[in-house]
Amino acid sequence: MELFTESQETLEKLSAAITTQEIKQQPDLWQETLNNYQKQQPKIDEFISSIIAVENHEKIRVIFTGAGTSAYVGDVLRPYLNKMGNQAEFDFESIPTTDIVSAPEDFLKQDCPTILVSFARSGNSPESVATVKLAKQLIKTLYQITITCAKEGHLALEAKDDSNNLLLLMPEKSNDLGFAMTGSFTCMLLSGLLIFDSNTLDSKKQFVQQIIGMGTEVLARENEISQLLKNDYTRIAYLGSDSLSGLTREAQLKVLELTAGEITTIFDSSVGFRHGPKSFINAQTLVFIFVSNHPYTRKYDLDIAEEIKGDKIADDVITLDVSGTQNFSGTRFTYSRGMDLPSAYLALPYVMFAQTIALHSSLKVKNTPDTPSATGTVNRVVKGVNIYNYDS
Image (cartoon, rainbow, N blue to C red):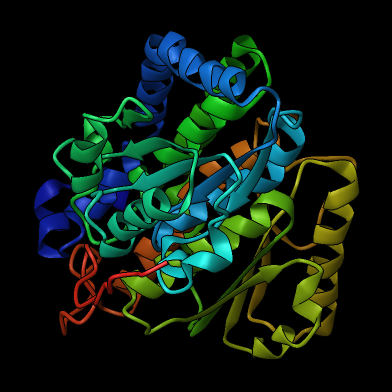
């Protein structure tokens, strides 16, 4: 079944209408995200420049934070920006709010000027709200950038009256109504890249046009993607390197969420997978490998792909790639463009592919993608978190 061209009535019967549409609309949202960035660029640049001027060249920590999928935005951004961000002024780190709230002194440095970049779909996750409070309590010189999809969320409302907190709202339709974060993740990721990437605006615009084309290609090739799932697999592994290593966690989470755990998942770096986690693979396992465009890093991605294929222990090994001088000898999903894209930008069309895998996997195990947790024990916005007062 090709869900991206299926009727609304059929999708509603499958309880897949919301998630399908929210995956499908992402290329349009990426263009809107770029347009919004261009409109706000003077304000963004002025905010960041003013921080650099005040701190008088003291190194500034930039902490990317969020809960769950929102935390994985920073995992993708950090490796790339520590090479292509303003290295003279910033140290980029990715620390989940779920880590910060339970041990704030391990992560928040009192005497180090810090920009806390909060990524949030709803802005109401208890840990994310608490992290902002803790940062204000513990860090002497704190600045914030709040990147959220919900203008009425707690984080957005709190940012409005704070001159040291730059509020950046994502496209309205990126505030996913479905259970799983899709467009919210990719729009926040793209915004982080546009803000901190030191490439010229023209280069970034070219990158965005390429990822839009690649995302559209995922939609057009849905049948090809669904054919990768024809066998009776029960496990999925996602592997990758550099920024794509950070993406593997989000890719596997989509499968885990939308199948309610009926498909077991694992994620790892391409090189790290050999050190024990490779034991996960059996004859019912699909292994997906995100292949980097960087010629050196690519060798490691292809090595693990060829090794697992040669072992003959998996149902199939599939690389997600753009053609290079070296390519995998087995099953490939190869985009027709994007040869010069850095991995942090490749992450957007790559995760759109992974979202499509998760959507089809959900229906394959007879689950409902829009409401995958039948028991209600896992929620769109997490519940049941106790936040305790912190006495420093």
